[in-house]
Length: 307
Image: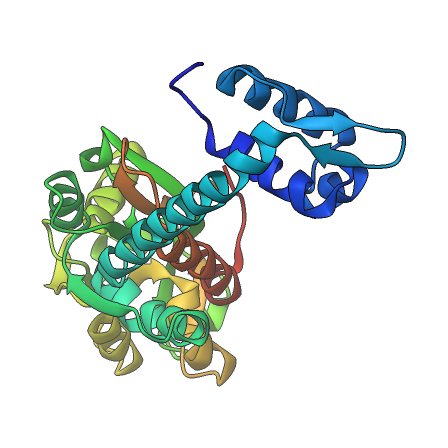
């Protein structure tokens, strides 16, 4: 007799003994009759004796089979209870979701994601940490955050990044600005503009600086601030010209309070991702949160490309 008895073989034996029919057992177990027959044969080999007498219509337990059935059923029930306990333990461990998000994600994406997520997982405790893309990448790497929602940066090397959305930077200005009135940007005037930009340490500011360096145009920020909502408000007050994605000002653009014009034919693009540790297997809750984030971002940002 082989000491190793597989739980699937136990399940097949108990089900066949109860139904007395290979095909009925196969339907109940969602297996083919052939798979049930092979599993039953393997179980009989493991215990070292035949457990059924096979007739044309039914499978009848042998004396040994009758003796083994109560023990097998009890063992199977114990295994099922063990698996159930393990699942409940995993569920308890997965009842907390630690999310890192950039300021823009926190303001424009995360509230809608949480609202949809709670419809499916009302009991999951969600902890949100706000920070820069670099900080989020570091927190995820060190295991203090489970998932990070932010633009992808070089700091994300070594992490698995699931594509969520992408957005292109654009000029945003007051409707009475000369460019808005003309409907086009005068390239010779770019260097002399008063710009309201993201703070110098941010990834968005790096994208802006790299872009104008390639364009061989030198711009100087009039105001730097690490909050795109404040940048938008300053532009709405006609204090300067902003450079940020147009979707952030969708309402104002729709009402005619702001105007947008493209930076050029190949503007800087931010790739939004949901990052996690490479060897971390996502739980159901984490997978759901990432999926909802993608749907919300597609609605808010307007998805342009995936993967």
